[in-house]
Amino acid sequence: MVEFAGWEMPVQYGSVIAEAKAVRDGAGMFDVGHMARLWFRGERVLEFLEWITANDVAELEDGRGHYSLLPNDRGGLVDDIIVYRVDATTFRMVVNAANHQKDVSWIKSKNTFGVEIEDETMGTAMIAVQGPKAAEIVGRLSPAGSALGELPFFGTVMTTVAGVPCFAPKSGYTGEEGFELICANGDAPRLWDALAEAGVVPCGLAARDALRVEAGLPLYGHELGDDLSPIAAGLGWVISKTKSFIGSEHINRARAEGTAKKLQGIRLGSKRLLAPGMKVFVGDREVGEVSSGVYSPLLDCGIAFAFLDADIKPEAACEVDIRGKREPATVVNKRFFKRA
Image 1: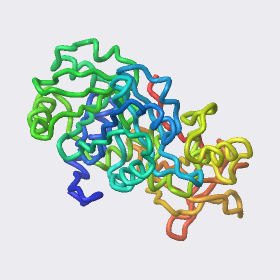
Image 2: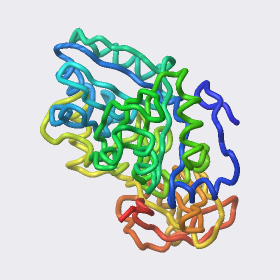
Image 3: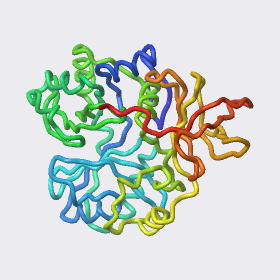
């Protein structure tokens, strides 16, 4: 157990490698109750969310969600988020635990639209069930049954799982199919135990970090930040090209002109662990530094994200300085794993 953003969080229950492989091969679950959960209600809620977030909220239908960003005035990010549309006047949002209070303060400071904002974090829990067998197992525990597996990614449904009322979006942070089940706080132990009994493997933060890097997913504070362009992080696909929003002029300029650095993948030829801040070289030239590094149970080697000079191409040979010794590596696509 470790402290994280004011919460006690499990790093691992047993073997980190076994937990990561359970998610890739079957189903694993993560206690992600530390993630902050917000409600937005009001007649002008769509207009408000269109202004403060980067993705096109107007394109969402009832029961659908999407990955998005909270941009700041300078072209960086307050946070990366998920937005769910319940109906025309009601939306939900999930934000990062480390940014919880910062996000709420920022959002409220921009609320000139009369929108009601409710923070439901402490009254609810969230359990992420992830893996190729997640839909099958959760479906067996729910009257929604096989319909859960047929939901589109970021589709949502209100149902019960093991008798526990849940808001069940089809989403996650591992590159696998799965659900992030939001339930009342007091119901979480019962839901967790039922999932464990059904064969879902409890997993900790270490496995989650390895899985998200394998899947090419950024983490705020590493690949994203107040002074980092989401364009440099490769998130142009999640940013509207048609609407005006907070900081859009800076982000549009970065999209048009490019950025000096670009987020890429690094694959080591060994099992050594890469850490943020380690320098990357191509020949004698320092071209960037690592932002996240893990041992990949899937690939059985060290992998990382790194912000590199924009002219560095995938498949380029490089070296990473690990405590004074340069280790050979290869620049690769930052999405190391993609489920067929």
